Image 1 (tube, chains in turn purple, cyan):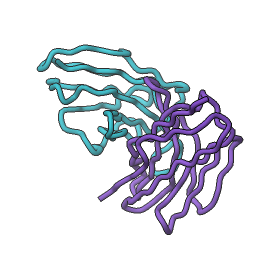
Image 2 (cartoon, helix red, strand yellow; image 1 turned 30 degrees about the vertical axis):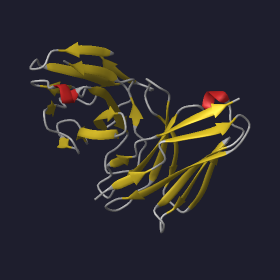
Image 3 (cartoon, chains in turn cyan, purple; image 1 turned 45 degrees about the vertical axis):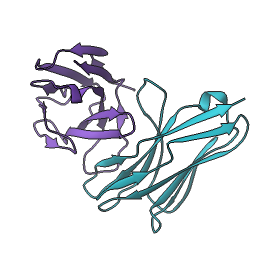
Image 4 (tube, helix red, strand yellow; image 1 turned 90 degrees about the vertical axis):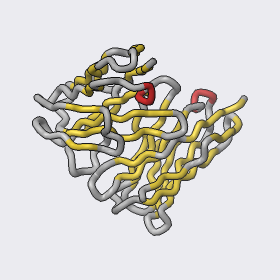
Length: 109
Length: 114
């Protein structure tokens, strides 16, 4: 079957660094997406990885290891406004996105 | 949520009634999708359309139908609503199907079936 696992909740301190892990099992693989979702709003695209390695975008970076079925989203210099849900999604062989249930991040002062 | 609108924003519906959730995009994207999002379960694909005139079933299609008469619109219909269809419904679109183009989401419709 197809499955995406990520932690339900994480807490971090303002100014610190947090890493949100995601493991996936899909029928084929065509890339790993990360979305950010503020409560009550639409998910918004953060990053896409299809090759092994790190993709960096400002304070956010995403890593992929295809052999391990593993990705992480790395946020540095955390701000209170980064308190949101972060959703991992793996694209299977038919180009369908399989989503995890999301990780709720709370950034404390 | 660039270029995708959904209506209504929220709705309370009596069980057994029918309802159509509307979705329109102005980005000329070929592919469109309907998801439902439930607490603890994440986004699950209901139906999709790779291009105008074609539709396909996703992970949880039962109780829902869709049509894709043109590129811009992708309505989702509940023929006879049941309480288990209480959820937040998101429409999404991407530039092409069969590719790794990013999916962009609409603002969502919060549906409560009583």
